Length: 257
Image (cartoon, rainbow, N blue to C red; front, side, top):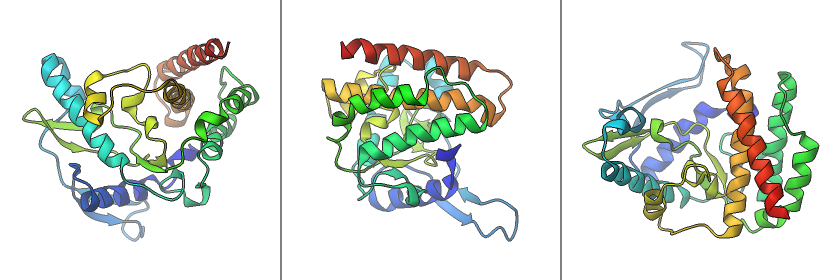
């Protein structure tokens, strides 16, 4: 998919940058090779984490223990987001970066439709329809002026826990310079009070909630593409993505009335 280009470079470079600039636990990069002299692909080695993924142990944790991890996820997400840039866009695709967040996000939406067309994937709402809706909300995106580093995938599977503390955060390959509300912790269908508390906020404003809803929509568009691009054994992710996309569009239309 378009958004996945040059992602190993992004992962390695961002993890090195965070290790130098931010008090966020990430594995140390030991070696990175993109020369293709030894093998036909880029590759890297990093320190091995000793703990377990949060997703694999959370069912055996008390709510208090889980909230402690969600709090730390919020805290570390905020620290990552404090790193700034002068342009918006995916970290490893500088040619697609832009100083205007609305233009950048609009192009990201359009990229998903180009990817869908390439693989003959049916999206339940047309590009024309979704861009009309996006244009109506243009003003809420133009209030985003600062490109911030966004991990975009800090979910329980990418957080490793040891002794009831976060030992490390992984999978920075899809990071981008963006509105911080693109982070997983701000998805409108998965609110975690402890995450917000760790991030240092109580709630989102109405305008922020609407932007967050649009970032939900972008994620659902990606979900509609994943099955065919990654050759999954079933279409569950596609069905879920289409269903959630339809629901989100209906919610946007209702709130416009």
